[in-house]
Length: 71
Image (cartoon, rainbow, N blue to C red; front, side, top):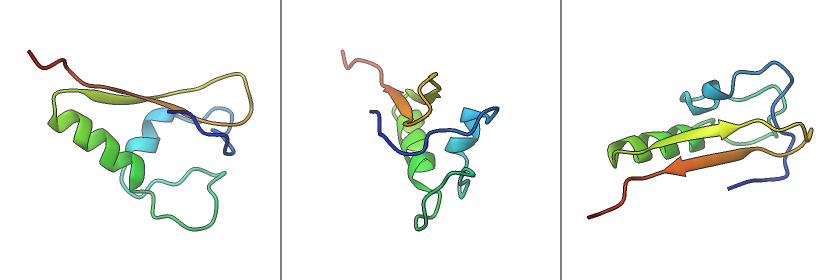
């Protein structure tokens, strides 16, 4: 998924986004910093993972959630 929000500040560690209660310096008012932590924990519980991608575009954030195939 990709949004068009403020993105990550230059030099930010995208892995911190998955820590509970972490809010980046460009965070919009409201929110608790739990959303991506819940996404990552849910993915891990299913044997997958979640990671954030940084882009040269100054806005937006892309998060990739990978889950194993059932079979």
